[in-house]
Image (cartoon, rainbow, N blue to C red; front, side, top):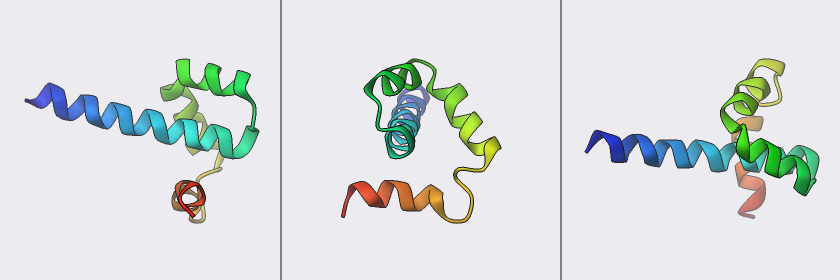
Length: 65
């Protein structure tokens, strides 16, 4: 049962990193690259500060307006 919970979290974080990638880049090639290396890309975005000051929730909400 624990394996299923982690796989759902893995999927959600992967989709979240793709939303971030599309929000900043609008490039299909970069979207594919970020899909392959999404854990590294998500850590990179956290470290450079693109998700600071409320952007972590503004980006997903921009897709559901």
